[in-house]
Image (tube, rainbow, N blue to C red; front, side, top):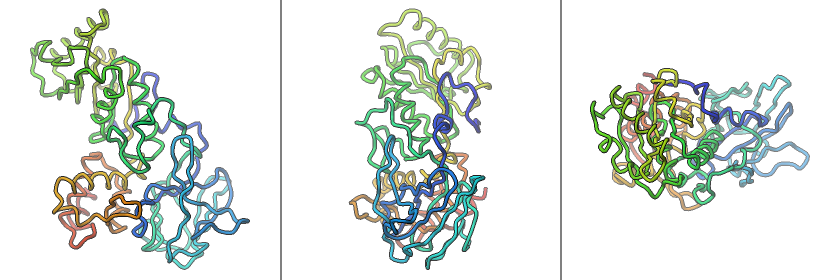
Length: 401
């Protein structure tokens, strides 16, 4: 399985490298707030460079460096309402970034602070640490640019409301997900064949379908095959299906393509490239293998390659993914899931969850991607009593395995 972004991405770079020229700041992203669930995804963005700042209820004193919640969108940081949680002090946390870019936090308010579940008065924070103000709000510590680059080509008509899925079902507000969206749109308008790389359950098929939908072939057919299920000796017509009409052929797990079928496919692609027209198909393929492990003759046909970042590289998106998955499960099986959902102040529905469960899910590595996340949520659903999702022995065992 590909555990890291491949070196050769055909002119495109992974999302985390694409924003690498932006100033990197420490940030605390809201992952849980029982009283105000609509805050999930909002960011407390610390100023770049050494300095001290504070976090607390309200706007703070004018002469103090107060960090206030924002919604980070491409090209703009939109202010959110200041914290109003009753148990949070007006000055609750003092944060300091030293000359070596080390972040320390000191609790000076009345609400107890926990770091990764352990109560502390002062701590040094690292990426993916979870900071909880007891029973009020929880954050995950991440690195972010001061400003997420503005989208170059992703259409505004498909952009999501904050925290929601976009028009293609992609969920997330992290810089990596926004760069992924822009890369999908860029690739879509360039008619080369595309290889989408990522880990198991990373959403590669969702990305492939989005590229087709954003492309000039969107009104033409989309033909999808699992490469490993294609038999040796398959004919051109059966392989291409409706994509033969100038549509898009999607091959899932292209590394499993039988050798004879691979040779036939290369012949089709080469003939199409020599004589483009209404029968010329575009190939979108997905793989969990490292690029160097794939057959060179087929890989040479992919002019564009896109890396889908794994969940562990965008852990702040986990609560948004949880909400999206639970919303879908509640629609499919209300009797099983609906009791765990509550309507927020903005009219949207949010899951009721114990903060320790959210922390465990955010800090998990997810070798199985979103499929694994959904399976873990299934264990929590079946193991929880009452109206709140909790951890359970089966879930804890799955997290440790």
